[in-house]
Length: 149
Image (cartoon, rainbow, N blue to C red; front, side, top):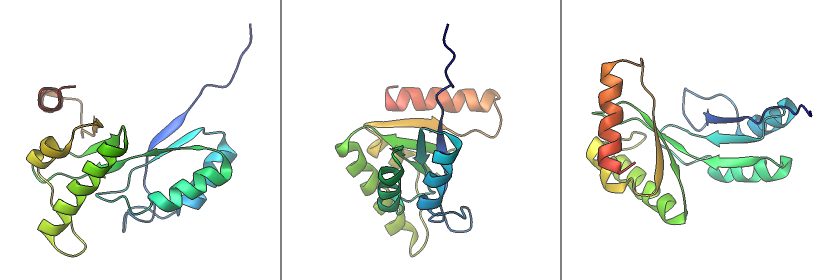
C-alpha cells in the first residue's frame, strides 16, 4: 500500500488587486504555494480579473496550475465565486464586470442577481454564505434553478 500526499488546491485566493483586501502579488502567492506543495491556486479577486496576467506568468514560472476565477459581490444576493469553464465564459465574465463597473463609476462595481443570471452561462458558481442556515439553502436553490446547475 502506497501513501501519497493528498492533492490540494486553494480556490479562493485574493491578491493585492483586491484593494484593501489582499496584500500579496500573484508572484509571491504562487511561490509560496509551490513551497507548501499546493498544486493549484484559484485567483478570485473581488469584482476584478486584473491580476490574471501576473497570475498566469507566475503559475507558469513555478509549474503550478492557475484556476481563473473572480469573487462577485452582488448588491442583492450573497457573494459568489465564479470560475469560467471556457474562453466564451471568460468573455461573458469580462462583459459582466464591465457592466458592473460602468454602472457604478470609477473604482467601484455594482452587480445584481439578474446580471449574474444573464451573463453566468459557462461559469462554475460557488455560493459564499455567512452561515449554513435556511437562507443559505434558499440561495443555493435559487442558484440551481436560475443557472441550471
